[in-house]
Length: 252
Ligand code: SF4
Image (cartoon, rainbow, N blue to C red; front, top):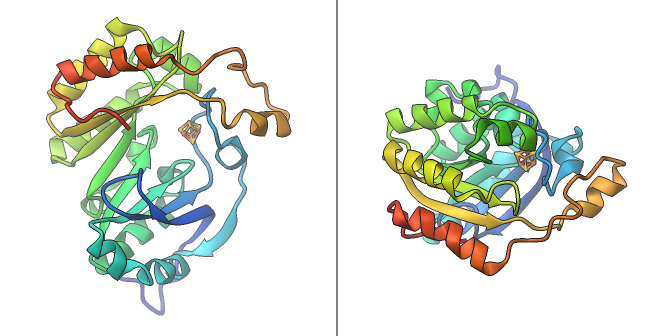
């Protein structure tokens, strides 16, 4: 339903925006990074905005006005709008309003989410999403719980709902040596993704230490200090598992 004079524009906590993003969905994109997340990933590179409520409070109307200035350019560049974070489903009312407003502007929409809060997506909101970047952090439920401090099942439930709806998904998988590099688990994830039928590509993202200093600044216990980024050979071998399951475009 369009916002009207009698409907206050939802407020959201916005960490930042990027007007010419090229890695969070197809084409050139306006990327909106929202604050807050339900997971506590041990490798999170934005704990300053994901774990604590930091950001600038903005109305959906204000953000949509900013987006409208780039709309013609994004359409010409085959892009659109991606809502990332944090996790956009942590602020579902705000995200819903942004998605609706983007569709009213004729823009392609995408959310980047772990899917843990997939229950926050109602059918009307789902209809306004053109693509989901779905981060499945690990296949083994115990590894998942240990890595992100939440259960895996809600993410799988959301993945299966997206599949049933035929909603395009790009799957993202962060490769952490010694934690998410078990080939047997990756094989199971790759088969699962192939079986869903709506996963268009898989991006294997090598773990890095870029956010480490933020953990230290916040006085948080960073448990991956001794973990090195994966060797290229390991990254290649994990990507090859996805390729063997039909995902030809699985680099980043
Ligand atoms: S899902 Fe993303 S934003 Fe949330 S804690 Fe994990 S890495 Fe950080």
